[in-house]
Structure formats: structure tokens, C-alpha cells
Length: 639
Figure: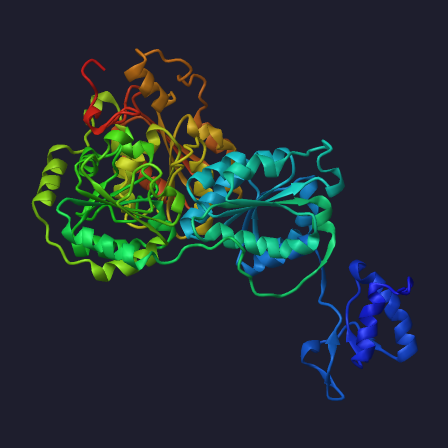
């Protein structure tokens, strides 16, 4: 029978004795008390020497020709481990709102804030923090980080996480949780954060052991940024963040069952090249996957080598320069008529990092009936989900394009390209330019492009403002246009602009907003003012929820139910109350001067309240579920 008085700590010291260990470098902590208790007696009995402090690296020391052993590495709390991984991951901006369940983390974060290694940005609402982390991630290509406390704090992140999930944006969210013994007992500020966020995150964790925290955080960053990017949430109970753990430096290990794709199947890439080389009516249809994979340069090379025209989704805007003659713009519900025409009548659609969204296809059974499809996507689930692919290539867009480019032949423009050019000439975007009818919102966006040289980072809210921005602001590089494409989140644009400005302090950042959407997260004006962020907010103010009103106008006999925004604030006074700059513009001749003046303000945000006609609609328009043949290029007669 084993000696009941012999514990694990005795076993450790017994092996030390057998290995002739006579010097130990160690630092005691709560988790090591049983070992140090036994070591107290050993030190007296066999003369083991304990060295607790010293400048030398114990891993490099030798004594009497033998290596000197370290008993343990430094003891950390879970919060220390979290911040240590932040440091290793290069995190220097954290968007967070504190609360009781994250106090241990914020206590450790205090020192990082004080020494300047982390900028902590306090949003005025957790949703604003999530959108700001999203804007930071989209505009920089880095992983955005947001923190919130348990219960309502975590729940307030939900819309931001869902927005990031739909648009494949890499975010790591840290949420507090009640103590482990209280989970499931309806404790104060307890919510099932894991259950609520499981459908809207790429992965999530509930931690029960502080020693697991460093490895989990490393995994979270890896999962968030690899493959198809997306948000990852880590739920950290109060006692886990406060508990002691041992820090171990280690290389990141592969995650069983998670293998982000690399290059595509060589045989499928060869077939795709053959189809491209034989195509008479090809179109490149690109989405956000081109941006997230860093494939924009290769895409440009492919388009110019083959002279194939390019259409983009809202997520793909900027991946190919919209000023390039090969750019056909955005197709779909509110896209350019000529871009929709190109897709609808193509003989070959080369889809890269896009997903045949309903806003592009309309009725999928009648979409591009004569086209063969090559679909390249990092997410295997997207291939054949909406449109059957003749060649479906599962792989990273950049690596697949590296394979494809050498195999495609140079191609000269022909009858197809001449036909598309004619369509572009005869079916252009257009709007009312009569100054007696008020300021056209399209003119405001066009002028913004001119005064910024099409170089600004543009965020948008959701609705008519979003579509006018898509149509009339020409982006020339990736990560320049940030919008909630999949979820369609009102209130996204302004906090996303804050994140983009913090990530790109040398760039002009503009939020194109509606008077409805801007009020969803208007409290973040305080955040922008505190951090002296020169974000420009262009409000296209039509005193209504414009896109819903447009549908009521066209399809519901002008029954404007719940869409007229009576009681709007004076946005100039509101800006000034927060300490921002504010301008009101109701004459066309003042548009350019006001935009130019905003560019001179570099120490605070600027709100520009442009008064536009309430009845202005977005055209072209393909009604939901309809086809290219049902497109309204301009307002129907009588509307």
C-alpha cells in the first residue's frame, strides 16, 4: 500500500534528490504552496538551496558541471496571461467597457494603459465598441479586440458580433462572466453568453481554468484571422481572471479538426484556366474574400492580362480600382444597370470570394441562365450553396490566383467588351441636377469623392445613404470601404469610422450616414471627441427612414407607416454639445466649401447636416426576388 502521507509535491522533490538537484530557482505563489511546504523540510534535511531573485537567466546557468533546474516559471493571474498574449499578438488598441465581472482584467490593464503599450478606448455603449473593433479590423487587416462585462454588457455586443460574422471580420471579444460556482444559478448579471453567441461567432469558449486562458487566447486570434475570418468570443468568469496560473512560453500548436485551406486542387485550377481561355463572354465577379486574403494585386493582374471586366459586391468594393476602365461597378438590387447586365448575360462567371447573395442574384432560378460558373472560395459551404458551380475550387483566393495566373492566356477585347461598353454608355447612373429641386444626395457623394481624391476611408450606415455611397464614391484600393453588407446594421458606420481612424491616423475617414441611422450610435461622439478623432460625418438628411419609405412609396401605395422622423435633433447643436464641429447645408452651392472646410478640422469630429429632398429614391432598383428584366432604372411614371 502506498504511503498515505506521500503527496505529489513529495514525488517532485524525490526526483530532484535522485537527479542531484541542489539549487532551485523559483518564485512561490498560491498554486505552489504545497510544493514549497515540502521544500521547506528538504532544504533543511539535504541542503537544497532556493534562489528566489537574481539577474541571471537560470536556464543558462550550470553548477559543478550540471544544469541548474528551474522549479517553475513565473506565476500569473488569468488576467496577466490574457494581456501577455495580447502583447504577443501585437494588440495595441482595445475597445472596452468595464463592469464588475471584468474588474480583475481592468486592474491588470491599468498598468498597460499607463505605460502606453495599450490604448484603451471607452465607447459609450458596448455595441459601439464592437463596431469600432470591426472598423479597426476591416481597415487595417488586423484582429480587432473588444471587451465587455457579463450579462447586459455581453448582450450589448451581440449586434456587433453578428455584423462581423455576416461579413467575415476578424474580432476577438472578451466577456466577463459570473464566478464559476454561480454559473447556471441566475446570478446577478448572468447571461448565457456562449449560448446566445454560438450562432453568430466563428467559435466561442467558456473558460473554467485560469491556466487554460493563454492557450485559448492564442487559439482565438488564430481562428479569427485564418481561413474565412470571423469573430471569436471568450467568456471569462470573474474567479478565472483572478486565479493564479503558470505562464509557459510555447509555440502555437495546430488545432485538431481545424485546417484552413491553402492552394486549390491543381486539376480544378487547370480546368478553370481552360474555361477562361475558351470563354467569349467572361465576367469576374469578386467579393470580400479577395480583400481578406490579400489577393487584390493578383486580381488586378488577372483582369488586365485577360481583359475581363470586373463587377464587385459591396464587400468587394475597392478590391479592384473603380476608376479602371475594366471596372463595371456593383451589380444587383441597387447596382449599376450595366454591371447587372454583364452578369445576367455572361457566358462565364468567375466568382472569387463572393457568395451569390440574394441582393445580387434576385430570383436565383432566373439569374445568368447561360453562364457557366467557376467559384473560388475559402469556405467550402459557399460553393454550390446558391448557384451550382461547373468548377468549384476550395482554397485561399490569393493562393489559387497564384496558381491560376500562369495558366491563363493574354486576351484582347472583343465583341463582348464592345457590347458592355455600349451598355455602360447608354445606361449610365443618373440623377436630378435641377438646383430648384434641392440638393441631390448623389451630388454630395460625388463631390466628396472629388475633394478627397477618392482616397478617403469611407464607412456607411444602412439604407439609401449606403447605396448612394456604393454608387457614387469610387474606391481605388482594398480596405477603403466599410459597410454592414450582410446584416445591414443601422448604426454601424460611425463607430466603425472611429475604429478606422484609430487604425489609420494618417487617413481621412468619412461616415456617410442617414439621419435615422446616425442616431443609433450617436453617443459615440463623446468617444471621438475624447480621442480627438477628426472623423467626418456626412448626414444625408431627408427626415425619414429613406429606404423603407422608398418601398412604401413604390409598393405600398405611399402608406408611410412609421418612417417619418419627426422630432429629429438639431445636429449642429448636438455636435457642439459634445464638443464636435457642426455645419448645416441646405444650398447646393455650399456643398463643396463645407466638405473642404471639414478637411481642415483635425482635432475633433465634424458633423455636416445636408438637407436633401425627402422624396429622393435610389435607382436603379431590382425589386426583391425579381430579375434583371424587372429593373427600374429611373422612377416609374407617376412616382
